[in-house]
Image (cartoon, rainbow, N blue to C red; front, side):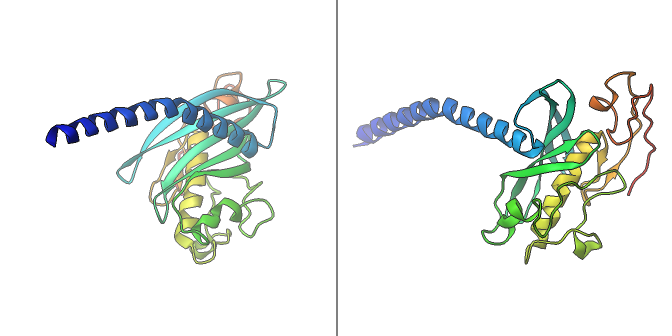
Length: 228
């Protein structure tokens, strides 16, 4: 009897391993396609080229988070901005957002990549902050001194009904995405940003090292050290 059970376990384990191996590549391709479509969606452009996928790791409140900055050019090779993957802790677990910014730091669009928010409540974040909706953030210009804050905390973004925690988490993800994009340090408790001084080259200034808001394509792009 023991031998039979062991044999069954070995066969079952081998079968599961084979299934995982067979499905791993299709799932990976599906995820890559979903991300590619997501980037087009949040940048608002169908014909684009992702020129870089920069990964930045930051320790926030004792937990390491990874920000991925997908830099994007248009069909003519001109810099459009970037789509950033940003994760924070929501009400039910990790809340992962993909948000698009133009070269000046304006929000072009967003989509939720992952969440465990309550259906009918926090899960409304996928629509609540879209263009024309009650908490509309599309077109908002972010800077180190102008971040998104929910109205219950003195800001001007309407909270999702009965889901203030999710709203704070979502806005924090957007603020931190901008901070990563602009090369700023992140205050994990509030989502506030601290600017740092970063030199610019004489060309492609806004595409690489500088805060895209401060950059003026000059030899330098000084950013004063300030904290909200």
